[in-house]
Amino acid sequence: MTVRLSEVAKGQELPALNVPVTREDLVRYAGASGDFNKIHWNERFATEVGLPDVIAHGMFTMALAGRLVSEWTGDPGAIVDYGVRFTRPVVVPDDGVGALVELTGKVAAVNDDGTVKVTITARSAAQGVLGGANAVVRLPA
Amino acid sequence: MPLDQSFIGREYPPTEPYEVGREKIREFADAIKDSSPVHRDAEAARSAGHPDVIAPPTFAVILSMGAHHAVVADTALGLDYSKVVHGNQRFTHHRPIRAGDVLRTQVIVEDITARAGNDFLTVRAEITTVDGEPVCTALSTLVARGTAEQGEQA
Image 1 (cartoon, rainbow over the protein chains, first blue to last red):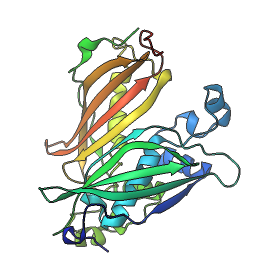
Image 2 (image 1 turned 60 degrees about the horizontal axis):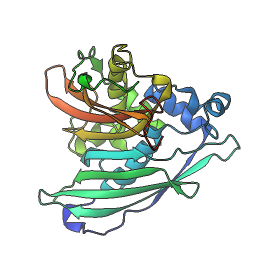
Image 3 (image 1 turned 30 degrees about the vertical axis):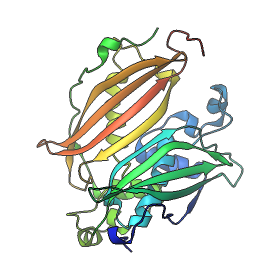
Image 4 (image 1 turned 60 degrees about the vertical axis):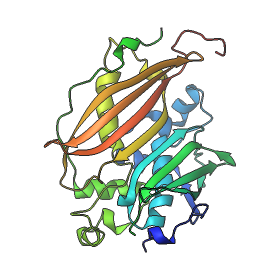
């Protein structure tokens, strides 16, 4: 399924996406990305440096938020610009449940050059975890 | 000690070439639970207009973070990496990264500021093919907590 530029209007909401995140997911992301910082898998180390528990990689949260956009466009290659600010960590307890990252987004602008700006909201444990998150996508006409 | 602002604009030598493999793209897509066939199936990617499987939009972090090592390890700059958190991240894709790409990354110190006792180091990573074709510009702000001179808000 591919969304077309002609079908898009400012204010339109993207289909929401909820992603459960467990410690196992963080270990897999660490391996795939090469970011083995211990705050993402070692509870003893995380609490020693003042964190409440193990936290997800900010880049993992950013990747999940990117999926909200690419699952809407149907083509991950449509994303030409994508930026976020990491405001709060996603805390991932080792309790058999983990964390839930809740993603919503909407069309903020249809630009003159035919690109579309999408703003993304990412929440976990009832708090925003990304700030200023937006993506610019180029859609087929 | 705040970071030395004379480092703004400094360019580090480009990294050794990184060859993007189909299986690495699949591994990364699996890790972010992205099931799109354009990350796995060359035929599906071609149907979507790409010459081969393409990487997810944040795959470039593997290259940009790898290239940051040159800045982080520069003792003359003196960033205390044990106090660093990732402040923000932006990717500008000139085209998607795809399997078979052989890429180099060059990092440039874009900006250095200090606010409320924290150092903010913004690093730009220019990811290109070895032939010089622009692929992705990654802009990362690293925040070293409590390493700058104490400000009134600290």
